Amino acid sequence: MHCERNKPQLQVSSYRNRIRTGGEQAGHPGFRPSSVPTLRHNRWLAILMRYFTALLLLCSTIAFGREPRTLETDTGQVVLHYHRNGHTSTVEWTDLAGRYGVSYALDAKGKEILRLQTRRFAGHATVHFSYHANGSVALAEYSNAPDAGIQWYRATYRFDESGNQTGIEEQGHDNYGPVPRPGIRPSERMPAPREACQEPVVNTYFIVNPLDYPVLVHLLPKHPSPASKDTACIVYPADTLKGGAWITGDATGDVGAVLDWRLTALKNGSLNIQPIIVKTEIRVQGSRQRDHFLVLGVSR
Image (cartoon, rainbow, N blue to C red; front, side, top):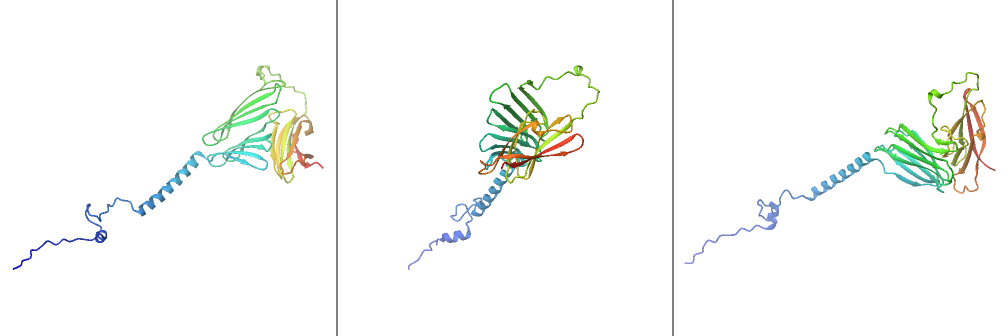
């Protein structure tokens, strides 16, 4: 009699079944640890990193403010610095020829706190700004001197973080000696005369531009003073610029006797255009105030 032994039968599961069941043991070929990131996890991680990078850039902009900018325009070069809030802190303009310029500073609300003229011929007139951490002006160091001679002038303007001027330091030399002048002690002051005298009248001059293009105006007082300084700036179309003031002892005053000016048209093809002062209008503002409006025009 032929007897067949019972052989153990091997149960072989296919790889497809193992994938479908997922495997239940670490050694099983279908096993996949739950900690391995999937494609969906990577996608969400990339989105989160993108938002984090954008937030970091935004915080950096708020903390450190905008970077300075240099612009090349049809009238010259403009250098801009900014407050932390994004508003303009300083503007430094130089004409296309690199000769005239004007630099001015603004507080965080846009109010002008300092304006100085610059030049790179017949000597120099320069200004260097230093800044607080919030972008506002801390120092303005000004220097002015001709090519030759004994005249020179330097001034350092100091400002707090809110744009308030906290001090000014001046030194220099003009035709009459050191600047600032040594003061007179109170005990040496002479008593004021009591006899009748003329009432002082303040004369203020303005530049009016009715033309359709900007004009660079360089004002040259014949007797410079804190109220009437050597100034160069741009007067735009339909704009009016306050230049300075001087005091006379009567109710009349000739602006031509105290002031010279240089005018340059800021317009393409302006070599043959020469702006001039075509008329002066005087307006009375009470018994002690006269306003002189110098109206620009073109020589015919």
